[in-house]
Length: 259
Image (cartoon, rainbow, N blue to C red; front, top):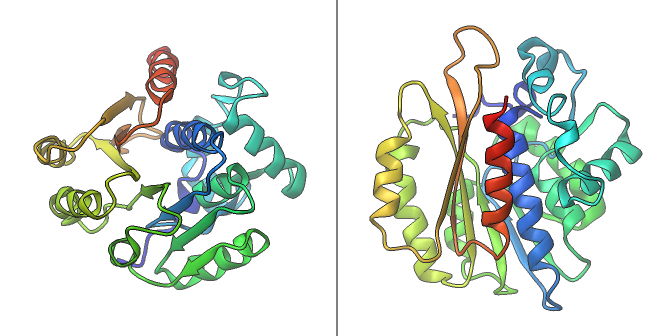
């Protein structure tokens, strides 16, 4: 359960989809002059070096963000945050979702990040120290259930497990329904992999039976990053999807379909 490290996959095509949608949602939500809470249940280390041996070994970034660099105009929220990270940390730096969120939010907003892996937690705490994030070495879903509804009440939660624990597929629909009951105004975004095994399909059926409001399901497919790799796509299931998210999802879908 504590073996997963996202450095092997940072900047892949799944990150491009997830991070572009995250930045668009937060950009829209921060236009209103009211504070936000951002909660992330599986935060990783927050900042990645794409020249690290782990990233080079899988080649996923080379097949991902390196190919999608021209998909985003300079004023796109994702491109703006990426430019800030590269200016501060070098051209080979890639931001995880905690750092993208921090760069999208404002001084009065609140950030809660959970990460259990000891090395990832240490790196996350260091990367996020300048942003005043509350970093928790705790099971992310336990944290989410304990602080919902958060203060401020407006906000967004990203649930982004590694799915190494196969029971996640069965338990997440009930967890998300419970979170929504506690926090009916919250945007809850779940990322999931699309695998050749189809392991995600029963989870999606269960989610769609929960009666959740204003849901957006967005999936993209792409070639395997290497021979034998089981992930052939990426999905986001979003509760209370903010205005404009559907338009960005449609745009991304067209771009991914052309790969």
